[in-house]
Length: 246
Image 1 (cartoon, rainbow, N blue to C red):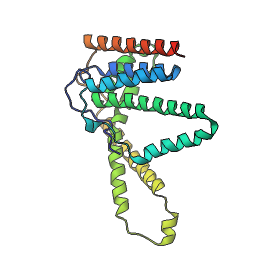
Image 2 (cartoon, one colour):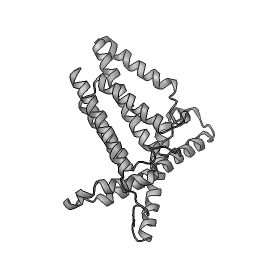
Image 3 (cartoon, rainbow, N blue to C red):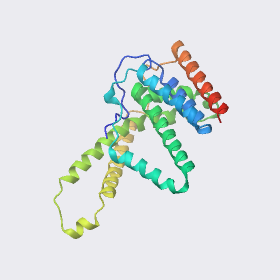
């Protein structure tokens, strides 16, 4: 499986130039609509809209995931499990799968077109009204920034741990029968994550705190307003279509 995760694809396009908050609001509107009206007409409109965004973003074909055969095999197995219940159960299952894929695709589009360093400042600006309620918006934004920064490092650590585990000498058959590769990798990953978290916390404390989220924070502009209007119109049209055909 080859998927570009948590990394912006450096391509010049109007979608890349949008403010990160605009993309997050758009993804929220799409998810909010699909949660309340996940019908086939609405899903079809959202699929066409996401394809249009991908084309407008000029993402290369290599960016798109190439899912392995066992993934499609598991989806087919799920359909077979629902088949004895009836055709309606299979249709509902397919609808749920398409809904999940649309949500994942929307998240990937945001990740592919947005620098991860812009996510936390955008969250802090979107949550600015909550500061009046004494909600720790800045602290939450820092946690999100550190999480996004740490996920690629954790994935790389897991790759290193898997490679190191393959180089271990084979032991007795009893040991091979009792070992669990998944548990071993997860345990080692948790230990590495805990150690890195401690080191990161000590480094932040030594530097006097988290400081500013971004040296040059961005703000929404006219093109962001136009993009949000387009997203709202598409969601409203999809809702109207789905409600009429319901």
